[in-house]
Length: 353
Image (cartoon, rainbow, N blue to C red; front, top):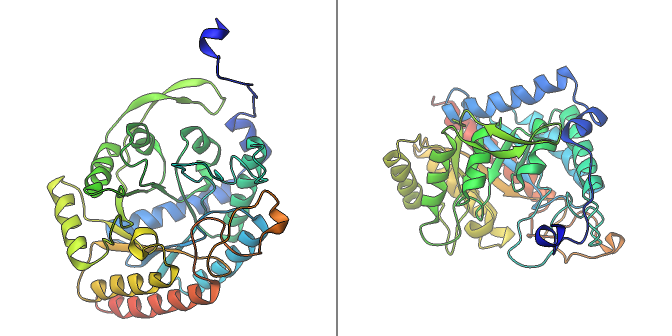
């Protein structure tokens, strides 16, 4: 029988259950309250009850905990300074979607060795997220693997369904049961915005699907639906952050009976993967808000300690400290300047409310 079912499985390694991990690295009642308040704040921004602008900021991916911790410390200090105008969420991406061979992220390959010490990756990720909670810095990520979310979702305040997964029924079902606001990114092909919008609508409904329980048992997950899905415009073959693209997205959301709630990703297709263009995108978005747009609720920046990117190395000691190993990022100096500019411009808009 095993020949029929496991012919191409080399080995099976059992790991701790989600509940075991939560016991090993537990969250306190006060910390639960902190994360719950973060989620409520983002919901209030999406609903227009909180008049601040959401800013999701951080590295393309987390590969070095030391560098990520330094970045988080700087971002936390700045976020608390700008809190009257911006609600800053750190971008904490532990998994990387791949349409070809490459490093799959800290969760699955924490040593960047190709040995895939997944249990250790989960442990490192959970400890880092706990550190952010203690700093009172909200964390956001891309939800890729439905099983992984069982181990870490209690520590995230915002999640995204990425461009590749926005068309996946399994990810839409998963999003319907996740406990935080979920952004759906447009797919990279022409018409990709429609996939994201259908994803938002689907995730708002009840679903039943197979998953795993906190005790590691296969279970039927019956969801209530997630009312806080929203659109993330990340560009495709060409940028889609301009005024006409935003108006078009608003119209399509309205046709589906959905609220017009849009976050603009200043990186990826919108910057044509040139980090220097993120500044141009952000200021265009702010200008639209200044001119009366009320559907744009936030923006995303890919940023880290140093500018640019470097190739992945099987020996992490060979890597330059503070430089992304995936998409190129803006550096900290630029990040701080842009966030201060965004807060200053948006503060004037708030005065008109």
